[in-house]
Amino acid sequence: MSEAQMKHRKSILGKILTVFGDIKVYKWPMFVVYAPRGYAVRGADYREAMSAARPGDLLLRGYVDYLDGYFIPGFFSHAGTYVGELTAKDLADAEGIDAEALFEPGPQMVVHAKAEGVLCEDLLDFCRTDRMAILRLPDIVQADGPVESRIPVSQFTPEEERVFARLKAGEGVPREEIVPLIVERAISRIGTPYDFQFDFANFDSLCCSEFSYWCMKCCTGCLGLAPRTKRVLGIKKSMLEPDSMVDSGMEVVWASKSAKSNLASRGIDVQ
Image (cartoon, rainbow, N blue to C red; front, side):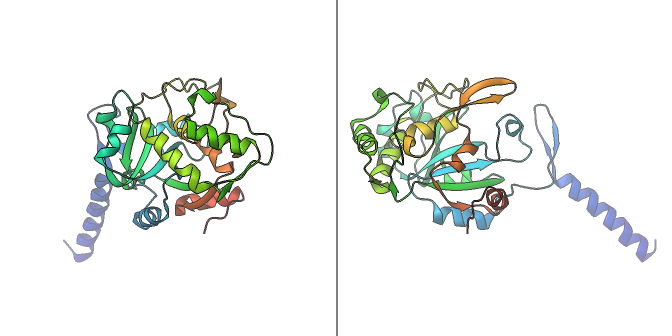
C-alpha cells in the first residue's frame, strides 16, 4: 500500500472515530443520540460567572436541542436564584417536605426548581448549559407608578411586608436591604414540590420562574414582573416565562458569549 493510500485510510478512520466519539448511548429511548458538540457555555464563561454572581441575583439559562426548549417560549428556558455560600446550618431554615434530600452545602450555590423539587446546586453545575445570563436588582429599587402584588400579602414575611409598604409609598429601597430577604426566602423553599401545572395562583408547589418570582415578591411590582396570559401548546396559561425576566426592571450584569447576540438584538448591551 502506498503512502498516499495509508494517509487516506488514516483520514477516513479518524473521521469515523471522531463521529463515534460524539455518539451517546442510553439505556432508554432514544437509545442513540449524535451530539457533535458540548455545551456552548465554556470554561472562560464559567470563570466570569463565578466572579460576577452576587447573592440575590437571578440566573437564566437555556439549551439547544433539548425537548423542553420547544415547549417553553423564549431564548432562556430556566431560572434560578443565586444565594452564595450555604452551610449545613442553613438546612434548618429549609421548610420543604423533602429538604434534607435536596439540600447541598457549598461556597457558590444556586437554588432553583426542577422536576425533583426546589433544590440547591453548585454554580458550576448550573453553568452546564448553552446560554446564560445574570440579572440583578438596581442599586435603588423604586416604583415609577402604582405598586401592586399578584402574590397575596399573607405569603409575605413581616420584613417583606415592610419593604413592600415602603415601595408602595413611593420610597426607594436599597438593593442591600432586599437581597437578604430574597436569599432567606429561597432557602426556605428548598424541598418544595415542583409545580407541573404551572399554576401561578398557588404557591404550594413551584416551577422555576414561579420560584424566583415568589422569592422577589416584595419588589416585583416595581420591576414589571407579573404572570401574563400566554399560549403554550395551544393552551392559554397565565405564566411568567424565564425569558420575559430579561425585559424587566432588573439589569443584565453578565451574559455568556453565546447569549450576547440575542441580548443585543433586544437592545441590551452586555460588556
